[in-house]
Image 1 (cartoon, rainbow, N blue to C red):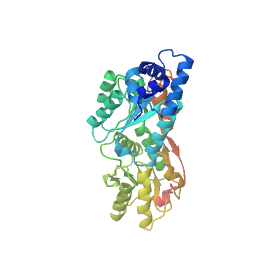
Image 2: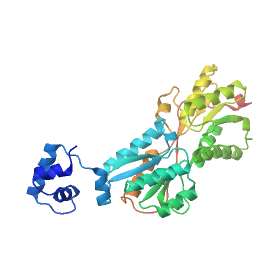
Image 3: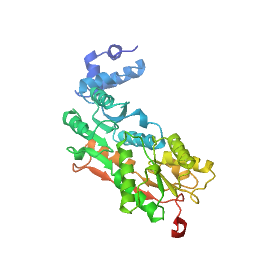
Image 4: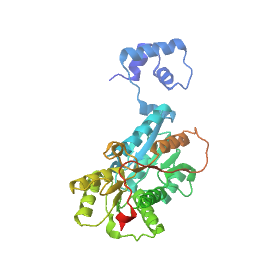
Length: 337
């Protein structure tokens, strides 16, 4: 393996001079630098980036902590793509750390990124509570921004969507189209986003004076498979519904398969809606009515805050946008009766 000493010998300089030239912290003459560059090219030497990070205390990297439970699916792959693209645009390398299966795993992933001397860290938490995240920011050695969670004490370090309000708005829309028997496929039971979307659905029903029937709330786990199983269970039990609202588009597509297999049509027999505006819903037939979550804008905010290219201020609160497509039909008063 070629070492920095091999480069120094070939360039006719000391090892310390090569190190200074690589780090760029101390002046090295153009003539000497040219010899070193030539020696590096001829030997094929590759600098030890980790060692340079430790020496300079800079890494030109941004960390992202996200649990592996969320890797699978177009919504989160799109989020990671956006984080990587914006990091590159700001001359930073994105380093992904797995938050795995517990709040301690998420803490360990954050500590790992700090040990790598990441310049800043983004966290998309699943297990850490708001209180734990606030405390973590108190002690973090680098800037931290929390995505998809509103913090209490460090509001300027959070970028989030009001999922409860968005779900309430979606359910209000479905009610305005004449639907009163609306089934809801919930997200994973340990998900703050899932809890908020369920609460928004319930809020809108109460607001409209519609009794919340627990038989219409079905368990899900964010996956297409869980949406399919929930849809099958709903239809197998013969529960009368005019619309199915799933807590994300992946589960809505799974429910669509169950509806189709039962011989019913969307939206003529059962309407269907979801959340996130995943690309799969745009190309499904009929195209899926959904609530667009501005994840690209949220990641952009997080990067600007972390790299100090944005003015400090309050939390970045985003709102979802209703995307009305062909999967929801209007139910006439006569049909409801």
